[in-house]
Each structure stands twice: as C-alpha cells, then as structure tokens.
Length: 178
Image 1 (spheres, one colour):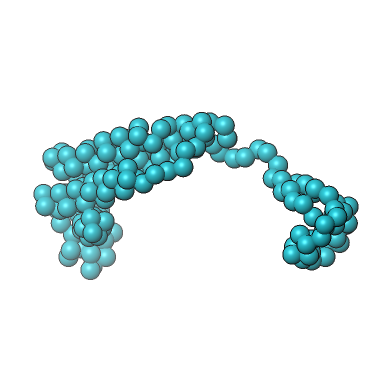
Image 2 (cartoon, rainbow, N blue to C red):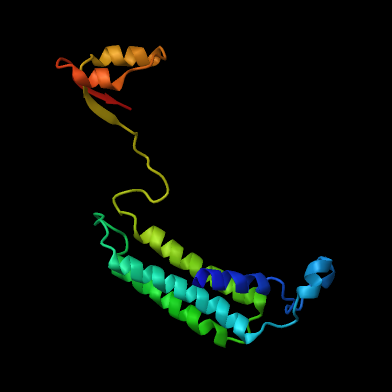
C-alpha cells in the first residue's frame, strides 16, 4: 500500500511547475490546469514516507528470511540491511527539506533507491566470481549410454537426441561438452 501512496503522490509531483526553468507552454492543456506552482507538504510526506515504508518493509522481510550463504560474499547481509534501513530513515526525514523543489525531491529519492539497489546487487555477489561477466566456458557433463564421439557427431549433424534414451543404457562414458 505504501507504494500506491508514493505512486499517487508522484503523479502529482511530476506535474508541479515549482522549478525556475519550467516552461508552462510545454504542458498540455489538460496538465496545465492540474499543475501547481508549489508542492504541498502533505504531498511531500506521502511520497517520501510511502517510499520509506516500502523500503523498510522489504528490509524486515529480508531480515526474517533465511538466505543461502554465498562463499566469498562481497557485503554481508546484515550490512546491506543496515544500508537499506538507513536509506529508509533518510526518506522519512526528506520531507523536512523544504528547499527541495519537486524535481530535486524526485531526483533525490530516485538516487537513494538506486543506491540501495546497487548495494544489494553488488553485495550479494561473490568475490570468487566476476561481477560484470563470466569469463569461463560453460560446461555440461553427464553419464550417457552412448559414446562421446557419437553424441558429438549427432550434434554436429543437427540431429535431435533423446535424453531419456541416453540415460537408460549401462555402457557408455562420461561426456563433457563446452
């Protein structure tokens, strides 16, 4: 529900023309009538606190969930949750910054949420793996009833292989494909 509250507030914030560079002529006739020259304090509170509550709820859900331990994790879960909770507290206090116009308010909240996302994405990866791309060749190995060269020949010729039939037989060898 807090996302709905923040989203409804955002739909009003984007129509405000409280920035000195705002060109009212670029607004359509429908939106020109709905545009305000200032942001109401209640709108600030609904938007920022709505986002803060959503982020805090996601933090509490993650706190109650038992995650798989990743060897060599870049940032431990508890530290990532502290960052999330801190950003939620900042979002709760953001409506007190009255010098922020609608553009700066939306930009600040977007930056804070993007920071929380970046910390979570980076922190949940392993130091043993590359962050941007995997440089290793993908491999698949299996015990098959057919010989490796027969499978390779069939694959090169574009033939369909029935996995069930390959798994049934007793004789064969360990196959590894790249």
